[in-house]
Length: 484
Ligand SMILES: *[C@@H]1O[C@H](CO)[C@@H](O)[C@H](O)[C@H]1NC(C)=O
Ligand SMILES: *[C@@H]1O[C@H](CO)[C@@H](O)[C@H](O)[C@H]1NC(C)=O
Ligand SMILES: *[C@@H]1O[C@H](CO)[C@@H](O)[C@H](O)[C@H]1NC(C)=O
Ligand SMILES: *[C@@H]1O[C@H](CO)[C@@H](O)[C@H](O)[C@H]1NC(C)=O
Ligand SMILES: *[C@@H]1O[C@H](CO)[C@@H](O)[C@H](O)[C@H]1NC(C)=O
Ligand SMILES: *[C@@H]1O[C@H](CO)[C@@H](O)[C@H](O)[C@H]1NC(C)=O
Ligand SMILES: *[C@@H]1O[C@H](CO)[C@@H](O)[C@H](O)[C@H]1NC(C)=O
Ligand SMILES: *[C@@H]1O[C@H](CO)[C@@H](O)[C@H](O)[C@H]1NC(C)=O
Ligand SMILES: *[C@@H]1O[C@H](CO)[C@@H](O)[C@H](O)[C@H]1NC(C)=O
Ligand SMILES: *[C@@H]1O[C@H](CO)[C@@H](O)[C@H](O)[C@H]1NC(C)=O
Ligand SMILES: *[C@@H]1O[C@H](CO)[C@@H](O)[C@H](O)[C@H]1NC(C)=O
Ligand SMILES: *[C@@H]1O[C@H](CO)[C@@H](O)[C@H](O)[C@H]1NC(C)=O
Image (cartoon, rainbow, N blue to C red; front, side):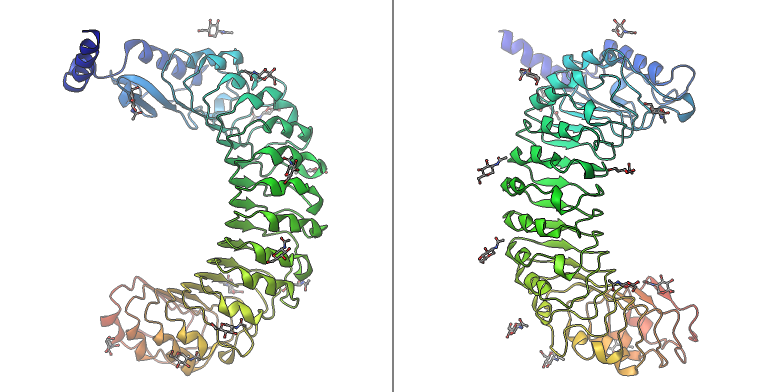
């Protein structure tokens, strides 16, 4: 009987207007939040939050008339200065699962302990505010046993602000603390060791450099899959050997550190068996600092080595050739003069980025077998017709070919491109072509972009090609001698 009544009530909710729309009391509480965000004299949301049914308001989501999501990103007007909301404002929403208050100049909370009453909360995003250590602003969060996502990025937190009790958040799967200042008191990172469900941890841009031992607390996060440590001034010594216990780690992002010094410690990375993505860009790495054993990462799909000091002269780079699952390789902005011949044999490689090196040849005289290559970027190198002919015309899977700022010039090279039937983008800006555009360009049916400026082309673009290039959206020809 009782069950039937509930059933009827639910069916009623779906079929009759009287049950739709938000609860009057939740509407009132939302208006209090609006007043607070506008304190003392702002006008944010004044035009949006007027309708009777608050479930239709901007940033509000309901389920069966109850507010389950409040999303107020950058609603506090900048001129009003810091906002100190009373955390109790959010307590009355008994079913609230998501609370997003990013970018609102929150300087701290009145009644922060009220957070402990928001037991339904799953996601709390407080990034881009001004939360700092002084106010005990995070203590109340420790009791949110159901919290799965917590974003505190881009605040003013130092290590002291991370209360040990955060350890209690055993359901937490995603935590972002990027762009804070955890360097001081970074031993507080041990507070994270109890978060046994954590899968994603972002500690980028925290100047963690000083606390050499500070990463040790992370070794116990057995379920971690995605670790962000970019821009932290870390040198190789910051890697405690126990980090290789992170056997689930798939993505490791280490760009913008200083791993070139003490790089011997990088061998620990080789023991992360599940690694799929490794970003070592911007670390002043030279050929000697790439551990040979990186080739042991048999599941690695993406490797980023942009902005380093690699010259391609040392055998450690050939270690990389064992990466048989590699699909993406970034080696741009280094000092490479040639590539290890074996790199021409990557069988899964789809994206090879070599822009901004000193390459005058690639794989010596050997012919690459890059059968699956889709994107090849060779811009800003020292390549001549001889260094790319004729093998490049056999890379018929290519969709994007970038050859700007080299010294290509011949008409055979130009005709060779016409073999690349799948090409969608061709960039040969900034070369020394003196020939004319070959009519065979009409064979590249899929071309949508051709970039030609800064050459010395002669003649006109054969009008006949345009009837075939039905996808062509952009052809840029300024600063050439071409006429159309
Ligand atoms: C809505 O609430 C009901 C009952 O609490 C729940 O079963 C359902 O999954 C919820 N739907 C959504 C989209 O959250
Ligand atoms: C915060 O809100 C609660 C509940 O509305 C209220 O009882 C309390 O007095 C408020 N605290 C302050 C300092 O305004
Ligand atoms: C952030 O808080 C600090 C003090 O903790 C203060 O000096 C600074 O002015 C605040 N910044 C903004 C943008 O409110
Ligand atoms: C929460 O953390 C505090 C401090 O670490 C600890 O004393 C307390 O026992 C924890 N509570 C639970 C329920 O785990
Ligand atoms: C990083 O920390 C070092 C001390 O280890 C300090 O000299 C430097 O100013 C800090 N950098 C930033 C951006 O805070
Ligand atoms: C890491 O794993 C080793 C065994 O592989 C174990 O002896 C050690 O205690 C672990 N360290 C941590 C911090 O879990
Ligand atoms: C890499 O793998 C080889 C065998 O394939 C093994 O002998 C070597 O110890 C491994 N190196 C590391 C650092 O795991
Ligand atoms: C790398 O090349 C840049 C410019 O191409 C040059 O300034 C730099 O000295 C070179 N570095 C090394 C280590 O060769
Ligand atoms: C490339 O692969 C071919 C066979 O697929 C093999 O014969 C050749 O030795 C390989 N070259 C290198 C440099 O690994
Ligand atoms: C290009 O491919 C064709 C057919 O597979 C082959 O006969 C030819 O030798 C290749 N040329 C180069 C330079 O790889
Ligand atoms: C090519 O060189 C020009 C002039 O030096 C530069 O402005 C342009 O950005 C370069 N293009 C690429 C793709 O590097
Ligand atoms: C258009 O494409 C067809 C088929 O590839 C080719 O035979 C023809 O020569 C092309 N026409 C021009 C003007 O390029």
